[in-house]
Length: 171
Ligand SMILES: [Zn+2]
Image 1 (cartoon, rainbow, N blue to C red):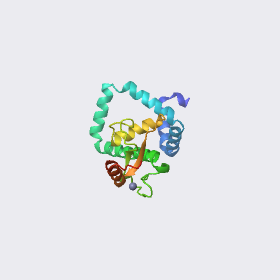
Image 2: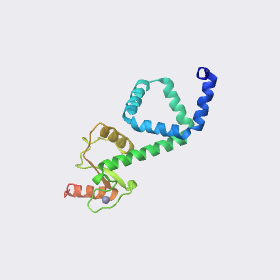
Image 3: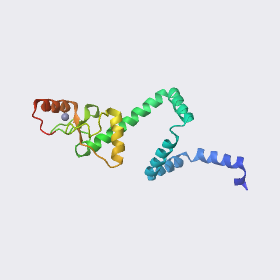
């Protein structure tokens, strides 16, 4: 029986992988898509279980050292994606855009999250930037939303000026 022969089986598998790359990749992508939630739970549980593992820590530290460029590129890409997700979530009509009436700024680099009622304490506290976006995404997944909006840097500034002058108009 060929399948009982380990070398034969290995050879078959290697050959199959080499000749069916496209199907395998598609199958994996479909699987990930269909099982996103359970996979996420599994990964989170695995991480909780192993995060204090010294060997793993060492491995990660070492990996970061030897793959500095890739690691940086990967986290930049991931952070940009999360930022976009959060701006869509909190943007006016779920678009990446300034919420100020008639303002058309949609360049994500020129936009920032704003605490609607200037209430930082109940809306993420001192968290800023990337940490804030990741936290908001986690919170959103668990069904929690905050009193936030997206404003461009100019309108952020304008709102602050209005607030200081005392004619804060609710933006
Ligand atoms: Zn604006």
